[in-house]
Image (spheres, chains in turn brown, orange):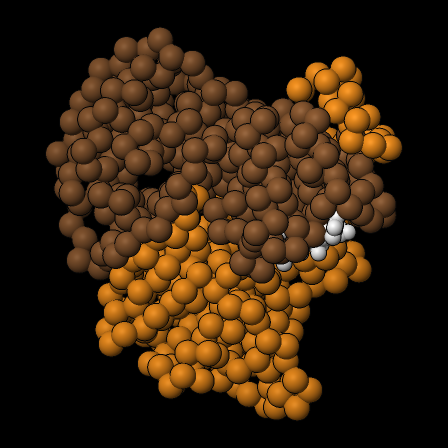
Length: 308
Length: 249
Ligand SMILES: Cc1cc2nc3c(=O)[nH]c(=O)nc-3n(C[C@H](O)[C@H](O)[C@H](O)COP(=O)(O)OP(=O)(O)OC[C@H]3O[C@@H](n4cnc5c(N)ncnc54)[C@H](O)[C@@H]3O)c2cc1C
Ligand SMILES: Nc1ncnc2c1ncn2[C@@H]1O[C@H](COP(=O)(O)O)[C@@H](O)[C@H]1O
């Protein structure tokens, strides 16, 4: 059976997450097709065609799919689904928005955020904020799955898949796009960065997050945050790492002024090396940190920046 | 207008769950249960809409075992007007819950259904989207702002890149994110009053649906434990370790 992967893309570019989802598709096995849905997505389709292991790229390039609203995008995928045994998407906000809608249109369950493929119908996924790993088996003929990027190494390039246009245009009188306020940053994407420096409530205010900038500059790092820092308005929501935010697993994660609640750990405990800087030596973050520095962050951060 | 709010009984968010020694499931014996935090936010939003005069009636719904009536009583204490319990002892996952909710939407004809974005036990993040598909209604997921205006609702959504605002034609389905509001606590007099509010019990058979999940749970294991590491005495030592021991600098 073939596998259809929904391409993740933003700002006219194919997002890195797609290569991780294709890797999960390869682990399942079968012909891999990638669907690029959006408006003016020709260049994205070409990028998807280069991904290793992709046999065909389907392009639904139409104003109907601009901003990838759930209603038309799910209708499109449900229309195409008949030819496939598996539908996969990244466990991004986009994948999470669209794919369950497709699953219900097809009257099948969805398996969310898989981290491993045991066989074409059996998968591993974290539950309870990652405090348990479930192995689940789907009895549905069509398997609808979102993929956690950190569970699968991205495929490389080198493919040359055929690109085919899809004419189906879903009509949508129910939802309209109003506006977007997207964070602009020259830093690497949180999910893709090799180094992540995150600040928590201990940072005190948004202004103090600048203390992390110099360090992030020197390390080529992305900057993340705890929920408490986002809730307090120090930084925007797209920086939240955790069970209900973004899941990261960089080579190096530096948690500053973060206590280490299970919901935060759920988003970063698969990082290769974890550093914690916290003035409370009892903070639970130290139980998962490879290197813990008990210190006042307002002293430690400037020193760290100058010595890196 | 009428609002339906879906509330799920889950383990309390402070509990670090453990798996059973035989790896058949997680161990819930004597574990504290509570309303899913995202559902608390959903109830709060409905109550605020009612306080602003936008909403006239709030119906709280749960699908689950008898004990889940506790969470319905909490919703009633927080301001819901009545509750519906779809009682079952099956392991209900998102699709089953969405099917039950879809039937109730058909019966109740609410203008808005508010759900949490994610249940913190299964971490599925599916039910609202599935309910939207089953009812053919538009969806505003991961909401940090909900503004009803006539027959439209503008929903600001927390997305990976920042915020996105969509406008939906009512009736519509909304799922809550953390920044939508800060839920209140139930006051004792309201908890007493909630005991007298109507709570209807139905079964999946009454609704003509099956709720049991078709996804088999084969086993549940603990995650790979991380070894706690060492404490370093200074920034210099930290940099030295990162360079020479961990080799990540
Ligand atoms: C449904 C739900 C979902 C959630 N999802 C998430 C999620 O996705 N991500 C997430 O992060 N959280 C999430 N949480 C919240 C989580 O439970 C914690 O409340 C949160 O992670 C705490 O953030 P914090 O560590 O920054 O703040 P705190 O717990 O307040 O910790 C602040 C730390 O800073 C230290 N500190 C203070 N001043 C200094 C200083 N000068 N120098 C050094 N250290 C200092 C303190 O010792 C303390 O350890 C969720 C909670 C719920 C209920
Ligand atoms: N059994 C249930 N009973 C009532 N509401 C539910 C149930 N399961 C899920 N929901 C609703 O759907 C939301 C998201 O759950 P899920 O998609 O399963 O992670 C929850 O916050 C609830 O609002």
